[in-house]
Amino acid sequence: MKKIAFLAFVLCSLNACQSQEKKKIVATETNTSEKIVKTEAEWKKELTSEQYEVLRNKGTERPFTGEYVNHFEKGKYVCAACGNLLFNSDAKFHSDCGWPSFDKAIKGSVTYVDDMSFGMVRTEVNCAKCGGHLGHVFDDGPTETTGKRFCTNSVSVQFIPEK
Image 1 (tube, helix red, strand yellow):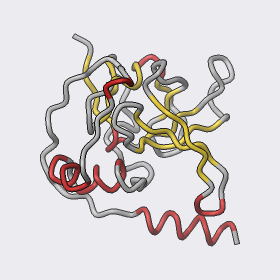
Image 2 (cartoon, helix red, strand yellow):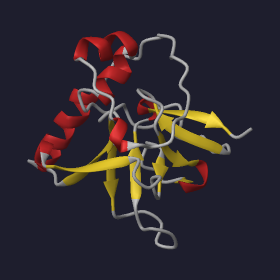
Image 3 (tube, one colour):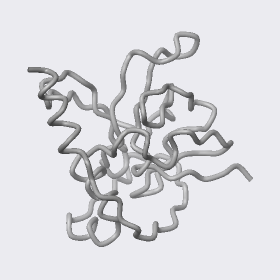
């Protein structure tokens, strides 16, 4: 039964990649008192269809297809919807899970929500500033650091290279 639920999850998560141009994002320091609130119509207008599906509808991109799965340049990762600074590149590690993985988020940059969907118990990770869905966090990360694995959709973040 769990295999069927997982298969249904994967099949429901498949999205056709559309070649829409990404908007330019500027990194901002986290200030949760300045939350961003927009209507779904405003989000739809600003985000690509794939970004909207993941960030607003809690979708998941297909494993091993995201832009940042094997990306290890120095820099920062920000929310693709609002520019909130989420992860430093030194927190990124190779996990073989199919999605970009980080062992820690920048303090105060994300919120956590219990997720019981698809017959699984997980912890959802959202942007603290706009509420966008980033992915999930698991306790199977590198034991020599935090032990956490922030399994993150590439489409929900944007990389800003170190200058």
